[in-house]
Amino acid sequence: MSDAGALAISLFSELLTADQLLRARLTRVLPNRMEISHFSVLNHLASSQSERTPAQLARTFHVTRGAMTNTLTKLEVAGYVHIRPDWDDARRKLVAISPAGLSAREAALAAITPMIRDMVGELGEARVRAALPVLRELRVKLESGG
View 1: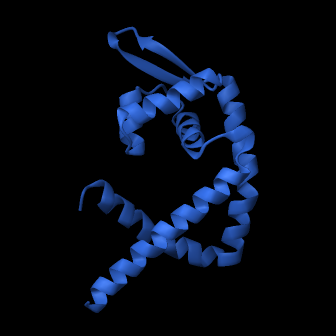
View 2: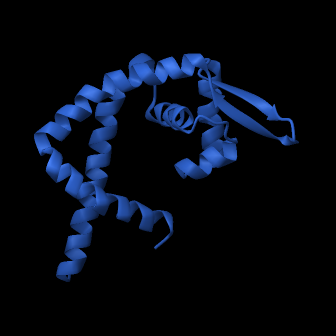
């Protein structure tokens, strides 16, 4: 195997392992048995401050519509999102974060922030800042199919 091939395999092996370990840690600290997918959707809706369709959310998170519908159903049952018909197109629905969802997101952020801050502190802020552009570029390439 070429050095470039070994490098690529090492990179993706590290990324996949880090993803698994990070997801396990996040799952342990998220409050009220919140799942990472729930937090991600709440965080997105809170940040965007606008309604989204389930299809838009599915595209944003690179999941199937069915997977997003499952997540949104759980969030709606918990009272974290409001789902309403689109008055301009009855075939579509619009999703917005509720006040309870905003509170749940804040509680989740409060729970995960110390863990993330400690990790960044251990790695060093300069090293994390240096890694971000490479990781961002990799994400963009993967999103575009490149």
